[in-house]
Length: 142
Figure 1 (cartoon, rainbow, N blue to C red):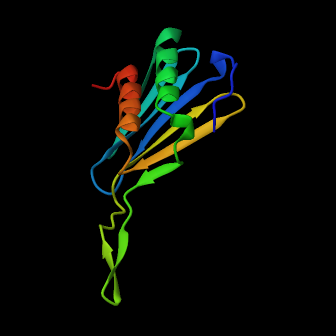
Figure 2 (figure 1 turned 45 degrees about the vertical axis):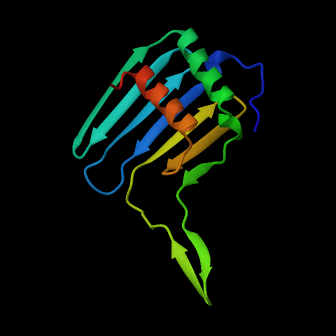
């Protein structure tokens, strides 16, 4: 999917959600609007907090430019480590591991007419990890 221009910055929404896995993992939902309002909801076990802040349009445009530069809109819908199947003599063997209890990150960028989401459940490229990190930093995570 290619991002279609022009669109009003006010119609842009960037969301990053960390869904906890099994265990004492924290989760969060970050929403960044094109108007510069960032809302954050954090939860850990039985605690919940939320806050909001405002950033400049310049900061949001830098984030969007980075997403375009790394090919976010052309990325597959998800990344996960897959098992490899191979022949071992007459048998089919499995290499890898099966894991179902880790947290996952969903990143969605939307305009008025388009939406692109990418799920990260292990195995995402570094450029996507850097985009996630930039979003967390803009939201005030340390």
